[in-house]
Amino acid sequence: MLNTFLNKIDSLMLYKLAFSLFVFSIFVLILSDHWELSSLKLVGLGIEGKEVGYFSSPSWWPNFTIFLPLLTILLGWLLKEIKQTHFKLIQSNMIFDPSTKTIINSVEVINASWNDWLRKALNLWAIIALFVILISYFDCYSSAVKPTYDVDLENMKEIDWSHASLISENIVSKNKNTIFNIIAFTLQGFGASLGILMLVVSGAYGTFINNYSNPTGKWVIIPNKKSDDSRKGFEHFEYVGMLLLFLGLLACLIIYLTILQNTYLSNEALSLSEFLQSLSKETLMTPLHINLSNVLVLMLGIIVILVTLLAVPIGILSYSAKKAKENYSFNFPDECDALNGMKWWPYKWLNSHFIIIAISLAFFSLIFPNIAPYLAILYVGSLVTYVTWKIAQYFKTESI
Image 1: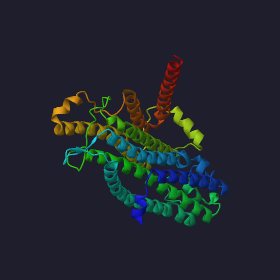
Image 2: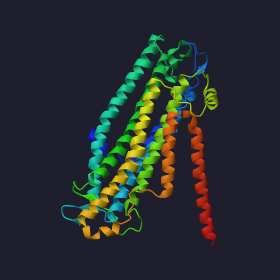
Image 3: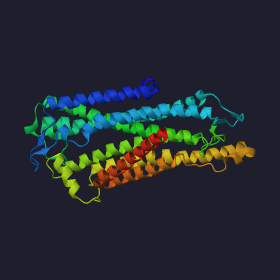
């Protein structure tokens, strides 16, 4: 049954999953408001009147209503684009069988290899996701459900909106609070599993391309010597690489909002607006507030940057282009002059410029959260300027 489910994971299924997550998160928002759990205020523990309701969270409702569904859509788009890239490789005569010294013309060969590779990666993801969801439910029981009935606050060190039901003044109904907490922690485990799925798919495709760039498999990737592009066919990987980068940046945004949430819970500000104002008054290079939650989230952010922003779209794709040139020179020594001047970098110059800025933005935003809004404004401003310039150039050309 599990294998049947994993075999059905494709772009269309992920699109449906994104829509379902969006609808379910809207249901949670409506439920929290209907049960008066959306605007709770903390009482006791020396922090009187701190807003800890669902709508007061800088991470929960934006992540689950907007950014996680969007990440799921991009992940589905990536799976679809991978198949299209394979078709372009076949059309460009870039898949070579070293045993028979012939070009492979069937896209099913490369797709079958990728599907088998992806299935193994998804089996690993299923085990990790199950473990994460079980931990989430254990956390739900130990930190929310059980204390709701015990009402024991002595060991509480950090208060989240989900723990507001522990304070007797905030309890609307123990049963309603328990149901809502179970739903919320289910979303938490599901969201973490989606993030892990993104890392698994990204890593799987990186290792897949790396494996079939070496002359040890049943087929290898070679450059397209007839391509007019200096990347000799590896420009086909640019779209996949850019999607990986967008996925990584979106994941970093989700992680950044989670860091803000963890910092808000430990801050003296009584409301989210007051908290954001206090951040604006601090120096830009104020380092990350250190606590256990932020350290764990930061570690996840570093993994995302290393895998989805650096290793796969930059390191592995560039290395694969280099190995492909070596494969071609080994199998066609008399024709290797056609690859003189071939570039290993798979991106255009302008895309490279934005890639470097984006990765720097992601890294510095996680280490120094206060600087993130300013870097984001500069980055978006440069993108808008570029798009405006391209539109102006287009209409100028059309008028001529």
